[in-house]
Length: 170
Image (tube, rainbow, N blue to C red; front, top):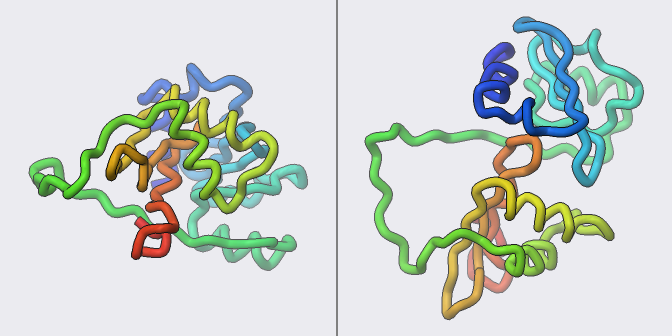
């Protein structure tokens, strides 16, 4: 996977449209750095030698590098993630509620339920809603669930509002 992510980002046009994003390394070890609401670093392959002391917020790192980071640096919190992809031929059943694109107005609801919200998060969420695919599940005219794409191309915020029986997990 190590060379796949930079190639995918380049193919999607992410690197061309992103401002202040830096890609270093090659197919065997790479680091992608940028800034959104925080300075972030993606790393793949044997990237330990490419890291800087200023790299403090990581995402999408392979387990071996995550373990090395945990040993070498103070880790404030860690959340493991898994990606599941359905084959293109699989059709999903219609849901009980409509799924429609989010608007900038829906960003306020997303921000209210985001555990990492701060002074800049609402503007960041609005920018994500306006720039990339962002979908919401609506019930009784209110957005009750959402999925957005972060500015670094990562899928994020798969949530149901905390007032739903799932307790907020999608």
